[in-house]
Length: 479
Image 1 (spheres, helix red, strand yellow):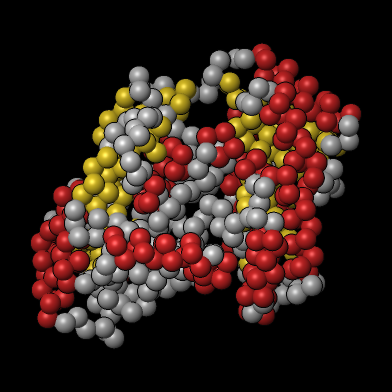
Image 2 (cartoon, rainbow, N blue to C red):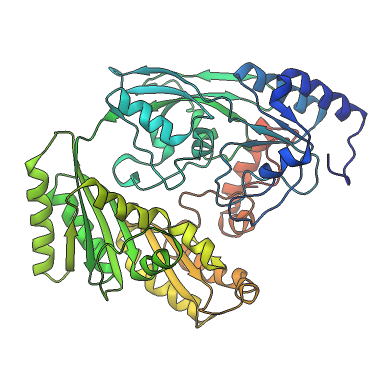
């Protein structure tokens, strides 16, 4: 237990009661056990907590929240702890209870005829993908942390990833939820219905709420026919504007079979090759911008995909949008391309200090944003390195800046607030969002207060006060 925090008698009794809710092996107040749960993946936030609980059922979660509600103990829900904005990290006050959903990791049912899967919040995303595939179905949510991130965190942050272009964000993949409210009451709406017009869609309040309104314990997820053929191309393009035009052409020409369309600058490729072992250059070139394009089909060995990809790229080359391209001939080549893309965050972490922006603007304005935001950032730090990459198909860029070559980490990070404001000003001027898929957490809380309209913030606070009147759920996050 943190040395600078002392619970009162009511809270001491509550802590003793909490330890009796779960099995002895499922709680700990030991510093070494708590330690991995006290900081975020990026190392931006470090907190304290007095107890870690790992419930194994919704009934246990309900009992835990009721005790915490009555004793006014803060609760920090946590999944795989892979969040980018510190939304899963306790504050440094030391009075929080961490509620890990890691042991609630069962797929309860799969309904292949209804194309749904009911899964618990602690399921690892890649395991859900594999389970769906074993049933000859497809769960399309996919992101770099899928080998360790958990469903509850994905839903609580409305995660995006690489397939949003075709399938939507996490909230678009949910038909029903099981939710434990702050007072321990349980909302069971685990219904696999695509049409349910019976009033407020309550689940949408909790999707993207970052654990501030309650705890998601299970969800009914949409499944899709399993892709049986895929074509992957890596293209050197004229510029960022060309990526937008190429995307529109590919969607039109393929009958909207584009599943992935990722912008990958040469600067990112070089950074990954320098810092991550066993990566290969997908296409040595001196072009600044590249795209990773994938077309899918539910038909095995679909000859139409080859023809579509060749026609799309051939015409784009004739028109000067694409300078060069390679089409993967096997899965090994495809995985090498994805290794470059999926190690982007790790490469930046290894390289040194970076200032990151998870933004979205209308797809048609991506090139305009790219130029305007870069000019605004360079005016503050002329030697920064722009590593702007991401999901052109849905307007979401990870518009990141790396410290100047050979520069000092602290000196660069000292300009973070100024650079953030300059970039986010451009985003908002272009009717965009300062957080496209990573959430707000602790990192962007002040930015949200600056850019969100007063009426929107007021409604959010009213919802928080109505559902969590004692403010025990993930305090200090989002609002």
